[in-house]
Length: 214
Image (tube, rainbow, N blue to C red; front, top):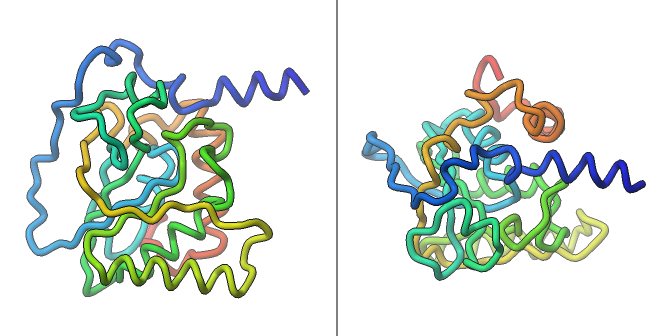
């Protein structure tokens, strides 16, 4: 049992990141302005996994890893991993609302992680890995709340949904090495043992939503 726990600990997202960047605040921001595209924000565990899932969807132009939900200004990855910033690892989804809707993105959110787990997802532990569905207006808030009520009424999950529903106050982009991490590091142990199985589990349920080739 202790050996298993040790192996899971080694797979944690925060232990696989380059430690040389820990002392730096993220100054990276995307160059593209993505005019005409809509944005949505979700936190559901390690952002390496979440980013890849959303980038695989038809209608999603890009996804970026970052931090949101807390109070610390300009946080870096080292600060996030202390669990003291209040932020969660969050993904910004850039999408074409004429092809894919906010509600579908929300459905993907709930289909691709366990929203009944408090402050953890897979082997990752801490408030930085908690489940949050962010909204930017009252329409998005209603869509989120109504969908959670629907899942609860239908008893889709065996346990209570603990996903937070929060207004997006500020999204901070994570350091550059986190962006497209799964694509750029396909042989990383965390990617092979945690991220890819998570994506394949989602793919088995929702292959009709994916871009060709995924």
